[in-house]
Each structure stands twice: as C-alpha cells, then as structure tokens.
Image (cartoon, rainbow, N blue to C red):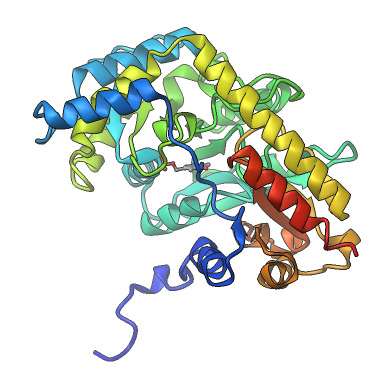
Length: 392
Ligand SMILES: *Cc1c(COP(=O)(O)O)cnc(C)c1O
C-alpha cells in the first residue's frame, strides 16, 4: 500500500498550473495576472442581500434544485437576455458553481467509452471531468487565423464526431482565447449535433462579457434551430457578479436533461451556498445598466492591458470577451510558454499562465500565454509599466 493511491486514470492530472503560478506570484511579490479572479467586490445590492440572508436564518439546506426565488430569477434572466423560456419548476437546477454543473452533466450523460467533442485550449476541469466519467475527449484545436481571431477547421470538427460521440462541450465566450463563437460556427456545431444525434453542454459563464467589438454578439447554442431539446446550458454568478468564491452556478434546459443532472448532483454536493442563493437572485434581477456597465469596464481593462502587452513586444491575439487575453511570446524570443512564465516574475514582476497546459496538442499552444485583465485599473497600469521593461 505504498504506491500512489490515486486511481490510474487521474494520475496524469497533477496540481493545476494556477497553484504553481499563484505560489510563484506570492513568493516573488509579483502582480498575479495568472488566475482569473476580480480584485473588487460585486454589486452592493447582492452583498447586502447575502448579509441579510445570513442574519435572517437562511443557513440550512436549501431545496435540492435551489431555492424557488433563485430558480425563478435564473428563468427570468434567460428570458430577458436570451429569449429562452424556462420553467423554474423543472428546467432549472442550482449547482456548486459552473464546475459542478459541468461535472454532473458529463457524469450523468456519458457511459464509459463515450466521446466528448470539445475545443482546445479547454478549461482545465473539462479533461478531468471527462476522465472521471470514463469518457474520452475529442479535442478540436482553435488556432489564430489571419485576422488574429482564433478559429477552427471545419474538417477537423467533422472528423472529431463519430458513432460514440455523446455530447459537445462548448465554451463561448471562450476561456482562455477570448473568442466569441460566430453564428456560422455555431450553425456548423449545431448541424453536427443533429446529424450525429448528440447532446450539447454549453459553458456560458462569460455570457455577459462579449465585448462590443466582437465579430458578433454572444448567442447561446440552445437558441439555434433544433438545439433547444438537446442542449444543457450552464452559467454561474462568479464571473458576472465578481464573486468567484461563492460557487453558485446553474444548469438549464429541457426537464429530462436537468433531471439527469440533478440526480447526479444530489450525490456530489446535494446543495450549497444557502445564504448566497437569495443574493444571487437579487443580482440576476439587476437592471440592464449593471450588465452593460460591467462589460464596458472589463472592455476598457482589456484595451489597457492589450496596449501594454503590445508595447512590451508581445504579439497579442485580439480578445473579444471573457476576463482574458492571450499573447504570443515569439517576438520576445520566447519559444516555450511554461519556461517563459516561470521566468516572467524575476524579469518584471508579473505572473501569467502558459496556455499549452490546456491543449492535448501542446505544440499548438507552446508559444502562447494568458493574462487576466479582471483587475483594478491601477493594477493593470502597474502591470503594463512592469511589462514595458521586457523589451529593453
Ligand atoms: C471560471 C470558469 C468556470 C467555473 O465557474 P465556477 O462557477 O467558479 O465553478 C467554468 N468554465 C469556465 C470557462 C470558467 O472560466
């Protein structure tokens, strides 16, 4: 009993790159633009509601699918922003962040050996959840096109589908590339889902962070013809309301898909975040101005950091959404993002993360690194100043 007790299929998953890079940031006193968490609190109305709920006794198990007020708010939010009608009684379930919703969806829908098509670079929990379920990932690589926007090859996407394909796991707006999938790209994906009769699970945690200069605005895959009945849509309060530590997420979709997720989720966490659920209900009901104001603020931070990175000598891939922008280190003489990120704190006091760890095809991302711009203006400015030392 002295060997590694971890089951074999999980052994390739070490500690995440965020653990290493955040420790490096702390040790060197660097500005941490590695991990994507905001450094300011979310809307005051939401924080006040949470404090009130905590004092007024909302401290026991909420109902399995989430408190009725939150499910109603999630359904209203989806109708208001995306014209997706949801029955809060059967078509909405609250989860421990988007992360649990993704894990529960894959565990609920995939038999051993089933295949999951997803785009790489992928959010790091995808590969782990697919592996935990005994399923197999079929990544399709996103590569910067001639205009700098990341795109994929239609033939590669088609080739990723086969008789064992159970679902497509799509993240748009996309972390780490900042890509917002266009309606033409979504139509291709939707067509293949229908041709191969698969489900779609969409990770839309950045649904409110598609910037005004994106090639096209964000569109949920669920709203495309023929997709409603086969799509499970996932989102979360963390990114939209700057409360990544709260871990309040949700999944919506047809009752039979939501029920499958709920039946798995009840044995993962059962429920979570009792006093935070009424607060997220308040946040989801905030006027339009909150959502557009938040987007405009992040877009200005993106512009500021992009300018700083460009001035420092990086080839910046344009970001159309999310908290992130990726940059090519080649013009600065870099060849390997991991090495480059390990040295960056010493060289200039800034931490980033190499995106190659989010690819199966490591070479496709070897020269790319990711910076988070969900930070205060003064922090972005200081980071830009520090990065300007790199080229000298
Ligand atoms: C942050 C993030 C998540 C996790 O959301 P939680 O609500 O914190 O679990 C999932 N997917 C993507 C793409 C993310 O960036």
